[in-house]
Length: 314
Length: 300
Image 1 (cartoon, rainbow over the protein chains, first blue to last red):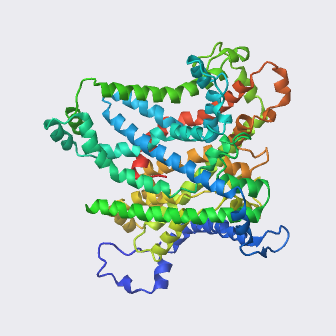
Image 2: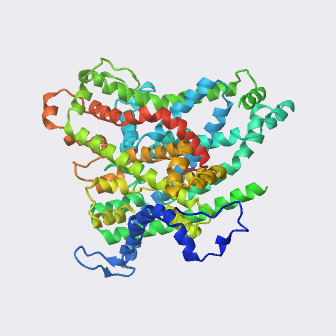
Image 3: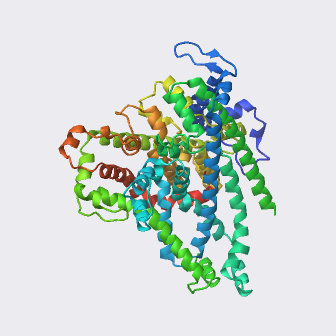
């Protein structure tokens, strides 16, 4: 249908001189292929993003929205809970980012040390599994283990300690959030580090062994330095999501006893906007979150690109 | 591969050192922490209702085997509705997403496409920008898609990350094959369906799984767009029943028939039912996901 310019002889190609209109016409089938995707993004995603302008308007269900300026932003920032919510969001995120950064690296190094292939494979298959469970299911599993008479209660009894359900205590729920996130991700997140370790030139190990290096010295001086670029990239990219506190996880762990302790921006916007119907107020909070999040994501991506480039030049 | 593993073996000690024992111990404990709660939950769901409360939190076999909890759960209409809705949304959404991802990845890898940079910029912007669920709700309501399964098929339909992943593979398709096909008069559709898709089965199955798993596990947006019980998906049913402890999800008549049923065991049975499809897919997932994650570098 369309004649693509032959790649082999670009210099002698007369089609190069064709007008832009002709070239676009030649690629009409290609544009047709792109059309549904572009249309989807314009009709849904762009509309949703553009819809955030509601933050500057009074919402009127039956008629045109009325421009309200910065009114709703002032309301959001002067609301007494907003500071706490920002703090919760950032704290929970930092905790999860650091946990899901350190432990997978350690776990990957451990997997590499284990020689028994069957044992290693079994551990991998088991540890990857939680990554594929939904947060509702993970909550079900954890609630069943943490309830009275559950696994943890049995362990407490073993040591003669008094047990209180950790899901209902505001001083332990943040720990449960961190632990369940680690439970879900430790195996899966270690894959990328394991790949980086397997990419290390094995002659380095041989040379180190000949020189009498211990396993610990090999880890310390060969494996860890080789992991630094991957570790830095992932940490930076995850810091880009500082405002995304994982609404899927938080929402299932929220109950009346701990709601305020783990209220984060996403759940707040959801609650105020969709459940209480304050569309404009929630839009202002949401727009604030999206804007700050966007700055962090773009900064993180730029930083990680810089990093990988300088790593390649080294 | 054999060369790598043999030299790796040469590089390390064969003895069991204290360090290795510690590592082994850590791994065993980790596996237990993952498996014991899961198996305990399954065992309780398979146990006779009267004996469930006698089971400890680490018992991984049922005290007395019985399928009664599964019989009760599966005899309600509501769970079958939920399963059907989840299947329609997961399979429909994945099919649409894979077709769109393949065709746009093909289009974006055509050499000399006018406006390619502009289009790529647009897609990258679509990847980075995000809107709160409230705005999505208003958009869906504007199209009258609330309580319509189409809303969840369309929500988050194309993942630009997957498109970029596929583009990397499409770019590596040997030019000689393309030239030959061109000479034979193949158009773009023929090229896409006869050459690119068959040649890149592995990455396409990988992105298919990348779409299937989150769609099956999604509950937040589904709960917002599909609040009606006739279009409720399985994860929302589960949330209502397990997280909110709302047993209205069950048929009251049946519940009355089995007075001695154990509510938590019923919840456990529902959880097991919801993860069974994933467990069936798990070997395939492991095979493709791992390579996909590595091919894509970092997947957030």
